[in-house]
Structure formats: structure tokens, C-alpha cells
Image 1: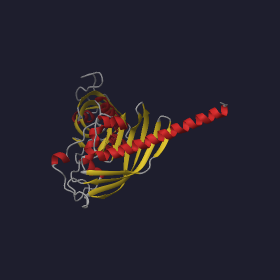
Image 2: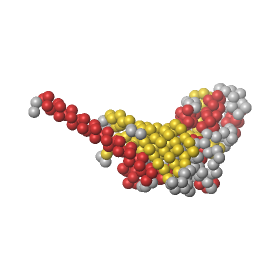
Image 3: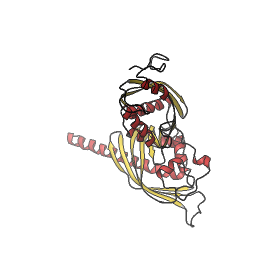
Amino acid sequence: MTRHEAADRDALAAEVARLADLAELKQLVDRYLASLDEGVFDEAWAGSLFTDGIEMTFPVGSHRGISGVAAFTAEIMARWGRTHHHGSDSSIGLDGDRAEVSWSLIASHVHHGSPLPPDASEYFQLGGRFTGIARRTPGGWRFERLQLRIVWTTGAVPKGVTHVDRQTLDTRGNTPATPAKENAPMATTLTAEQQKELIEKVFHEGLDLGDLSAADRYLTADFRNNGSHDDSLRGPEAFKHTIKIQQSAFTDIKYEILDFISMGDKAAIRWVMHGKHTGPFIGIAPTGLQVQHQAIIWFRFEGDKIAERWGIVDNFALQKFLQSGGKPAGPITPAGGPGAGKPSA
């Protein structure tokens, strides 16, 4: 075989391999959409479609990790009596063992109790676009990331809407299901270590650096900030309000998490905040004092975000410290342990 013939053979083999990958990726998309209508969601189903680190971001919630992805999908699909998902040809960008995949979607959702054909159905319909990342695994191509963006909707949303649905769908004119179902929170997908990492990101990016967008990234759409400056605020705006107050009152802010415990969908931390009092705070004019402020905070998680916060914040000690011109109001607990330090001017 000549060198030219060998090159042609290699090029042909590469093209055949590329076409085989494209065909398998298209089948992956088709299998996923068909499975939504078939309604069988178990570990075998998850393993045939997703990598261990699958990340899903949908308008009605998000999920991370192959553990629980079947239950997450079943919960979404249980809102409907029957469904029909129709996808366009997929756009696929191959890059070795990684592929970018996208396709358009029209999804029809028939309400529970709706008449069977040929009678007219009561339905909710949407059009949107799936985008995702797929990875080659020993078992074949699998989704590593999936995101759905809804472009249009028509018809009536489910009568048993959840609190997440209300943030993304127009529920006017629909009667919610029983309160227990309506208010049932979505289970968290985070491990204890991931919960701690998420809290650290919220404190560093939001409170230390003053990045308001951290609230949008890490908090649920109906986040509740209990025991804060204004309990009437809901959603990311509640935490943005806290960030603004901190940034206007203190400079060189640094939050230090001293202790952390996790209990299922809740976690607690003990923190101390270091900063310089350079702006009005709880009615006190700037003093220029270096302060240390402490608190114990509980968080509740839904999916991969923080849904609720309860705070026990020692504003009294800080107020007394500032009003006295820097006299310690009592022991504070930085990293050295109980009583290891005091506020200092």
C-alpha cells in the first residue's frame, strides 16, 4: 500500500468514526425525548443517558449528579397525565470526546383527567431550545449537561403547580392542588461538602466583594431571608438588600466561617465578620473603628441553591461597641475558639 493509499484509508476511517459519533449522539437525543413520554425513570434509564456529574437546568428546577436524577425527572413529569415531546434535528459540534448538542423542542402536556382522543384535550404546550454537553464514556455517549430555555407557551399550566412553577409560568386562573403538594419543597441535590462550598461562595462573592449577581446565581427565585433587615423581601432581592447595607456601612469586609454542620436539606454556620465601620449602620454614624461581628445562621437548600435563611446576629454587641467608641462588649469567637479574641479599634 502506498503512502497516499494509507492516508486515504486513515481519512476514510476518521470520517466513518465521525459519522458514527454523530449518529450515536442523535440517537441519544431521540432516546431522551422518547423516554420522557414513556415515563420509566429508574437507575438503568439514568445510566443509559447521563454521566455521573450530569447537570440539569430547567425552568421548573435544577439538579446535579446522577443520584436522584430519575426522581427529579419523575417529579417534573408527574404534573401531567400524558406528554408528547417533538424535537428538531439536532445541531452537534464534535470535539474529540466532547460534543456540544442543541435542538429545538415542541412539548405538549395533557392535563390529568383530560378526555382521551378523539375528544379535545386540555393541554399546556411550549416551544423552546435544549442546549447541552455530551461526553464519550466507556458505555457510549452520555449527557453531561442539559439546559432548556422556553421561548413560548400556550394553554393552561398544571393545576397542581409548585412554588417553582410560579416563578416561571403564568398560573393565573388555575386552582392549586392541595396545600401539601403545592408547598412541598424540592429536595436538595447537594452533599454536605457542596453545601459548605455554596455558602462560602455566597459570603465571599456577595458580602465580601459586594457582587449583587451572586444572589441570582446561588439563591432560589423565592428565597426567604428570615430575621434580616426586612423580612417582607423575597427572592434574590432580599439578599441583595443585605449586601447593599453591608457595603454601605463597612469596608475591607471579610467573613470567616468558623463552624459548619449539615443536617439533610439544612446547614448551620457560625461566622465572624471583620471590617472597618466607614458608613452609617443601625443608626450609628461612621466611627472608623475596626470591628468584628458574629452570628449563627441556618440555611435550607432546594436543588442546588439556597432557599431560606434564619439568622441569630449579635447586632446588640456591635451596636454597643460602636457607640462606646471601641470598648469591647464581650468575648467574640474568631478562629482561635471561644473567647480567643475581642473587638479592637
